[in-house]
Image (cartoon, rainbow, N blue to C red):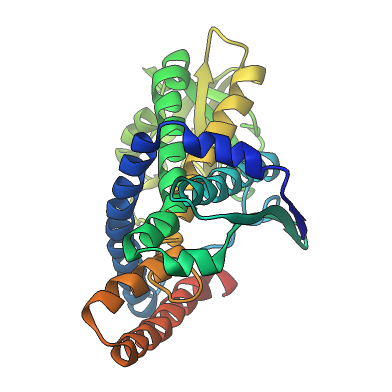
Length: 329
């Protein structure tokens, strides 16, 4: 863990510019936080029910480990952006409300990067309940804004530069009729004389196939006749035995466009999801828990408020455990 005060002046300068804007940003952040709390609680609860009742459940929560559970460089850059905007936003809103910062820092847990901004806890406690909620909600608000910016860049800048141009073979099942004919990396452009430009074109065509059918598949490496087997999970449906992804053409060099697109996608995905999970009303751990405490304290006595928080802590830990369990199994 590394602490410094070198960035305090930088955060100070940003917080002093456009205080009205930061004020509006903070209020919107509280509203977004409340909506986020309800959303993430509903998602984890409903998915926990599916995990318990479904014979083949999908995990609702997975660990973000660059190079293990997610692509290394794209996700690492995405995580760094998550941390910078999240902690920076906490610091800016704290200073905009005249709360001192003790330090700014970086941390490393095994191989996972971390960052933090430390507002003066005593000053924070002495401020109004609304101010504390503004500071707590600022982190996830910054993540949502960053996710929105990345999404707009993908939709308005990246996507218009991409033209679907066939589907690429990612892998081939050795026991399939395609093995030995098609190869990983081949791009399928036509099947039985029908142009295949998108994955949806491919899915639509495969719906009407049967085991024993022969498909004439045109690729960038040649044309092949492939005998279909029966789909392993859908009786009576034809099965090639390949995993595919969308292939694109672009006027911009794909060696440049692909990494930019990849970084933007993971910046969007990680900022949105981590920002949302951070709003789970789990007391003492997430920002959502701190906001939840402030809301509960308004309506209940200290003793009742503490009891409610303990109940939610138990429910929260249980929900996370159930959602994470399938990823271990």
